[in-house]
Image 1 (cartoon, rainbow, N blue to C red):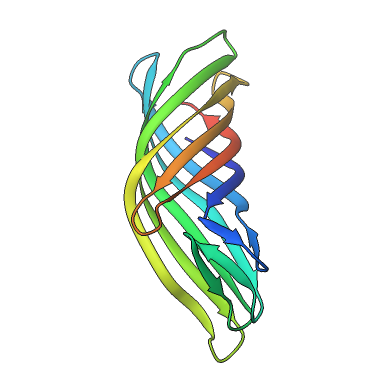
Image 2 (image 1 turned 180 degrees about the vertical axis):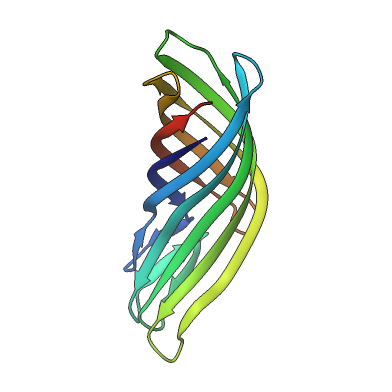
Length: 178
């Protein structure tokens, strides 16, 4: 059982003109699993990747998938993503403290685009998508005690559907073993 906190980087397929875009946010995950043998384990996880944020005023421009767009009022668009997934994790103890690992799995993701705008357009969810796609990653488990380890990892998640994008999560956390 463990948890990690880090930075997510969401590829929005947006190129900014005069609008501003922040594709990085705080991401976190909680997970649990079971060892199959000394080399393989299975995990389940819930991850919240935060949001990518696009800001603009009336007349601000950006390009989405090659199509030019223009803000017609002052607004902020947040693309929020979360996921539930499972993975197979393979690792090998280099010594009694350090274990590199790699993982491959699938995840069911949800994405909402939430608008915060000046009247008359108002605020709320303006688009949503979800799907099931693959993810993979790798990192290091660093043993602190027999039951506590630190974990540093990077994971890459595919987001298919209408979104057709991806995101990365760079995280560090703590793992408790029983």
